Image 1: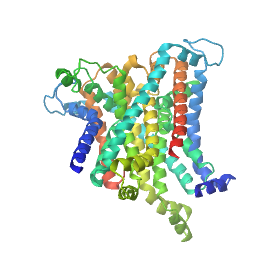
Image 2: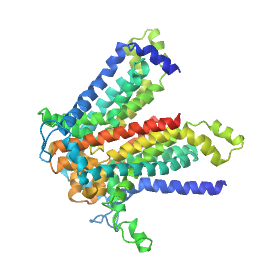
Image 3: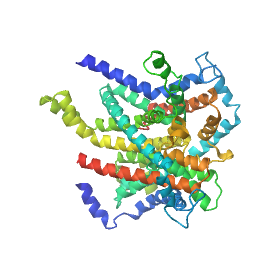
Image 4: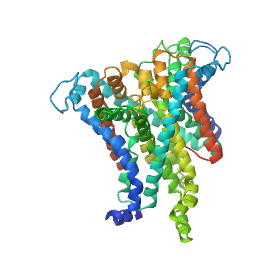
Length: 289
Length: 261
């Protein structure tokens, strides 16, 4: 409530000049170094090039990307991977966050710090590790094949490998986000439910889960945008056979030198992501309120 | 119920942590393996791959470039972030949510798109791609992280302290220097360090913006890995991992700071 009244009060230009002076550098910086560059990309994406010839600015590049099965599959693959990653990372991450909540506080906080190591080590070392672990004769697959549980199987260069790599990449963020929202649920509430006769399952379903939904929403958004915008995992674990929009942008710039088509692929990725994230937020906010 | 449930919980957590740590662990182990081919069964313990990093001029030079870029980008990002965070927390700003969303906006833009857009603006403007462009684009990428950490740091600050200092006769600058800064310093330090590490290990942002003279460490590793994967790369990446983890643990112990979560 007090939020709303402040908002009304400051609406008629009550922002002190000092605040604008402090905000101006950051806003100007992003305008020059992010918005202006994005405008350049948008402009280029509307321009003719060696692959698609047309007069003046037009949407022909986008029409081309949607019209060719090869490129349209890339769009679909990007979304499919991002959705699968979000789903798996949320399921595993929620369970892991719950399990961590049950661990004694001191040990739990050490375990939480451990989750940040892969993030800080950077994507290259991680993807290098997966290239070894998922290799045909690698330590994960060979024992299973030798035991006769599975037939010989090639994972590198498949969509599954990308999903595994990206679940690994997003999981720490999901666990940290869900853990933070679980930590905000007052113990008294759980105690009250229990003392009124609710079993563990009922406590979870009626108290913990509904109250953790905002955390689940932000975890889903983080996982989805990280998965849709990742470059390193799709490049190494999927390769040219499993192009997604980010690696398509890379290919247009680094191998075919087509700036206009790279711009179109990049804008497409950005627009699709923003639309989906916006729609998802609207949808979820209905469930949460 | 508790012993079965507890055993199950630990077994599950063990699996999750094996999954989270496994890929990096296997690289670290391989970086100490004396076998010349890669990957190979463990032969004997060696430090020769670490020693050979020093003989590879391109890696040494790129570590220097990455340090310069990450320091400059983290400084820009933290400076802009702390100013904006202070304004957002301290003053009644009209449209505060919209401004905060805009300033955190780079999080939504895929890293490779941030880099591509800068490349295309530079080309359209007829400029040359230099170290400055690389630093600016890294600063764009890490600013939201620095801003978020300083925002949470300032949110805990009691601004009554500032009013108290002012009413006791301290000037605006004296108040800022002796009252505000000491209290929010942990948030500032963690914002800078997190921004530095994220910039140092980033590949996609720089992918289109480097020249042989301005190649960052991830870019040189990327180029190296295109042609071959050998124990040298595992030693370089393990080194980065050790430094990043070392800094995190030091912050945690000495300053009681946490970068994430």
